[in-house]
Image (cartoon, rainbow, N blue to C red; front, side):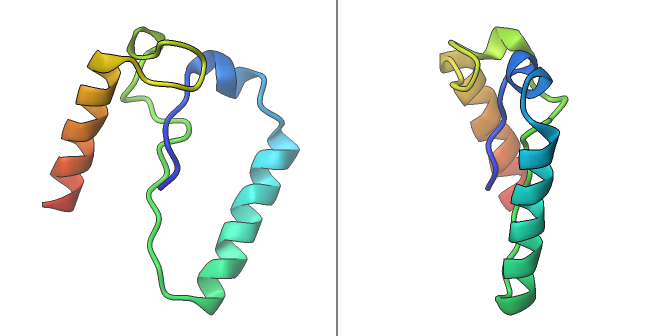
Length: 73
């Protein structure tokens, strides 16, 4: 699982590093059978859901839990 972060965080996140990260994940996926869920740039969350640029606040955590539970069912 790749957790969500604030829009401010993704705005300044290196595109090169992000591409490299997903390239590595895809290479690992060729070796091992696994599924990952990517919420890194999720539009489901707003900056109001965060206590800082990379950590959800209580309301954001509740929202994330509900989203995740709906995917698991």
